[in-house]
Length: 587
Image 1 (tube, rainbow, N blue to C red):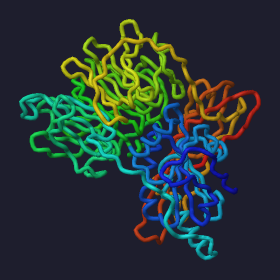
Image 2: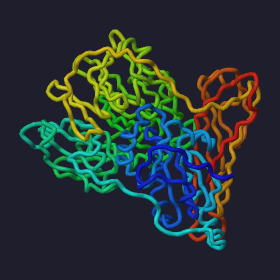
Image 3: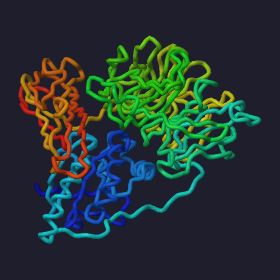
Image 4: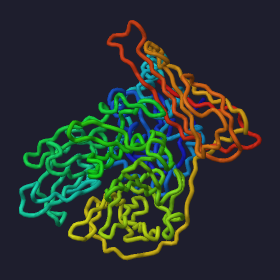
């Protein structure tokens, strides 16, 4: 079909608003994303080499389709574009008009438009870029021959660089003087925007030293979480969640030596209900848990809590299934949603699930519970009883001196306090720029104000915010109660074939929330179609599809590929509606 034209809106990274007509003659990839979505950040990384290799004939345009109100604000999007080093034009579409026009169902989704302005491919999820590149390679020769392909520079215009001591700092910890050899304790800050760690005096301003080159990937890429280990448990003193590299790093303070803890390799032989754990883990925070003598890792990119034994590097799943959602109970069956902050309190670890705007916990017995939060699309700024209180995409948590919990309520720009005794939430501080971490220094709460590029000491003042609970939802699929045919459309990219040398090359997993939405059809199969039995009501179908393919015989240096996508499809099931649900997987 002819690609729908861009709508009016705020543009970034370009000198003037763009139109598809202006881009005629080039391939265009539309990236439907939102900056709170971890999977979307993974796709940004996947697109970088494509933009470099095909930049002469291809333009990527980000279509920012926000989930949370904070994400819709132009200033917040501008900061996110800088934070995540987005090097292509971006259109902010807060009303999600293009989302509907292109029939998008999930974040992220990529749409490929050919030089004549026609949609030639569309696919949701990660791992799709190599397939799109193969399609572009085939079509480029055809358009070259027809004279419809135009080569040259794209419309990307970088913003003016900004200089500051910290750039989008994430979290901070106290370094004991005994570990550094200094006369006093100091602070270590994860300087995510500079891809470094920075040690300061306790004032948070006097810089002492930096770790890392400052280049993305050298060795850090957007480091977020930090944890100080007890003496003697490892050959390093500090463990770092090296988020965009998808590994942990160990830092020895005596000489600055940095080592890697390869999380994906440690999980290579571990399977969950949805299959192998994807390697794009995005570890967002780390903490030492004395109760089990392990490092706990908040693996936001795969919706898991992990443990690491620092003695031998062994990795295990502590909680979660890789299904994104909010479900309590035994840790192995729990659903998490981008766990992003950790705080240890004896036999309990508090964590925040950013995508369900929830404060949750796991105990040493292996049970997961929720203190504040309702679901993936429920949020707000509401104090009071925990059952009705609301947060908006929190990224950090810390235990206070009285064992209440401070929550860094990032997209509300606030520090909230949860008191377990009465089970109530209050507000400690407001008007902060994306607070993402906090720690106690001499009894004083120090907050990492990420989008303001600084550490601050707000004066806690108890306040009751009587806001309105909010609920947002992507457009729901209207399905008929009873039998519905689910089909995952998959075709290997040009030059590839399904790889069934070691067993079935495809798999499909389906669950739902609430569980009673699916009367039949839940579970795993090795085919990409299934008959579901649905009961009337509203909810989300959680669908995970995988397909393995390899380069066809005769290819030089043949490679294999795994295409995988996790969909959370909002559905409204009634007496009348569609009897088919079709999703597309590229590979």
